[in-house]
Image (tube, rainbow, N blue to C red; front, side, top):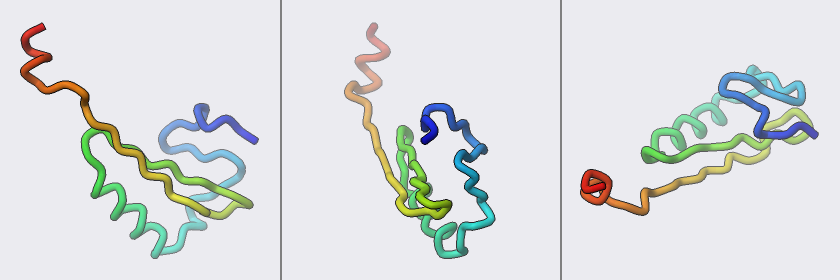
Length: 71
C-alpha cells in the first residue's frame, strides 16, 4: 500500500486512472470542493481501482486577524 503523503497534486497512485470517474462522481467532487472554506481539503479513497470514499476535512483558524496583526 502506498503512503498517501507521497501523492502530490495531479498524480495518482495504485494504478488509479482519473478516466474511471463517472460524471456523477466528478459532479460530487466538484460540489464538495465548492463547499470548502479557506483551509479545507478532500481526499479520494481508492480501493480496488475504484473511488470508494470522498473524505472532506475542514479546518478553522484558532485566532482572529486582530491577534495576528498585534504580534
